[in-house]
Length: 364
Image (tube, rainbow, N blue to C red; front, top):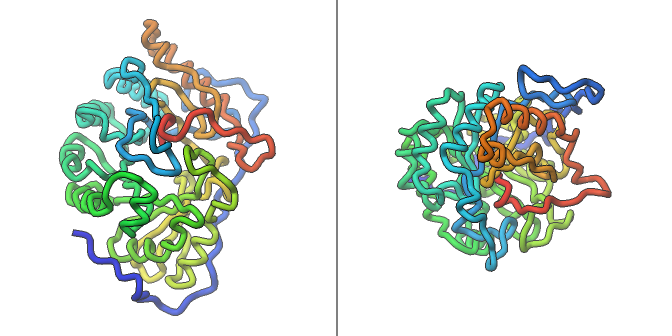
């Protein structure tokens, strides 16, 4: 079971000079005058090669987190419009042939999809280097071992508070103890390293930065602090609600000195504790966008291809398949979607428009 988290004891060496965020977010190369390649890796006009496919298997979720979904009145995609496992596997196989090496299954809540282990087994047979899953943890305890046996390699659990009352206010359904037990079950099944995603919102849970850092130190789990993004449903997004990654790093480093870990393509800025007691990460999508090194492509539950979480174009690969399209036609659609990717998401631009679909409809 997870050890008790004592945030009163710091077990810290003397504080060091505050650590700076690593400057790995170099701008993408401008290749806008080049023609789209018809063979080779999935590359966009700015030179970014795409190796990561995020697959939303459902837009349904059993929680109603304030930054993601309204509490009532949610309309989900009709089931006949959602991709079948065979269709998902076909898209993944075509993407693998084009250089995609890693998959992440998302939702909604992916464990709401019946017989998900069957899909994982089919995807594993293709030969991907990594198949990961992001989950809210409410159903993971009983499925962790079957998923690992089917070929899942890693899991990320969303958990926005270590305080039961705050957890309940943010999630509006579910119980913190269940999520913590799921983390134990995932590790027991060999789904390591286990990552924990924390969406920070000023005035809600930003006071728990220290508690989560201590949690990372005591459990060995990689806690990743995510800036609140303009994809909210009921809690309206405002810039002053963003608790910046820089503040997170400074706050933790003042107690437990940190040092950066270089990782060019990971969405998180990674840091290890200098005394060797684990790792944390920050995902600074608002204040320090990592667009210049982004290598992700998304497949929504209803078969749309998205080249950016904040994008607006959604060509339907489902329609291509259901109209009898060939793998070659699917490959062209994927290649065109990647080629049309913009240099950045534009959150900080004056003309920024939020996506028409919320996060649960897009996939994390």
